[in-house]
Image (cartoon, rainbow, N blue to C red; front, side):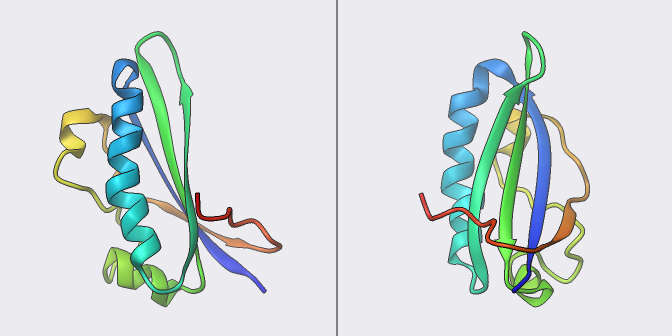
Length: 109
């Protein structure tokens, strides 16, 4: 059975790394997981240099309709939260979607 992977990427100040990850867990990841059809979600981070950290959120979904319930009618648009402007150096307008095959979604941690 295939699923849909939704990927969002942003860049923050490196000194906000832990604070932002905590913030995203309580906003984006909680919202992903509360939406019917979500199969799991994860955050990945990597330091780009001494000042910047890249943050990636990945979420796995049953269908595009499930993603629409989370993201709205235009599923390609990124969804942002009230304090994102405090952290983000870059605010991408869109996200990427991929068709997944296999058992890729993580457990709920």
